Length: 263
Image (cartoon, rainbow, N blue to C red):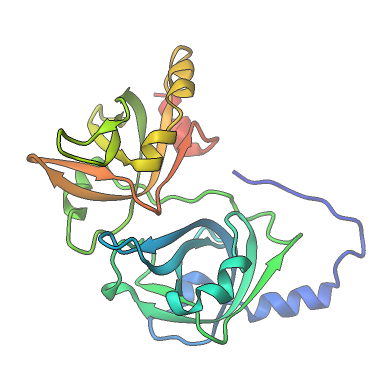
């Protein structure tokens, strides 16, 4: 989905724009081990990566989407949290310089859009663009097929995005008789009529808008996008579970969603 903005003549200095843009790198051209990278993109995701057992912060992570539709994960180490947390907000467009492209092999719960992660350093600079970047989409997903979910159930827990028609919404309840944690189980159906279970834990399960989904379902199909999930196996079945990176979208105006309505 694209949006456009119009500004009065003279708002920008053309030579300055060309100079700035020429210095930025395309996400697709960056390689592992590259230092001092300068990129421009929209921050379409932002979350705190935490240790499961202690709930303490590991890093501030996010997904940057550029004008070519290419995505890359960014990461702010814990020791730099205070320097950058207030400078980053989801959906804003930024020019970020002083980034290091590090291999993601040692980082769990990450997107694999690229073989690298753009890591913030002590020399990183963040410039929020107020009026440029309107052509960069507000959403971006790399959808995983239901058949690929079992292969994602590995120790590194790569993040995945799923989409489908919401066919069942369960109650928000305790995970088991002895459990203190609550979840909500949702089933989605793809174009091949395959079904995938998604488990929304804690806040995601509690705040899921069951009422709106039900009301929409009375008029037609409801297509859900569940981004930032991890795969696991429980009682012999593979399921996708929510985490701090999870974002949920209902009936977005996207070509992929429209495909479901024309089949």
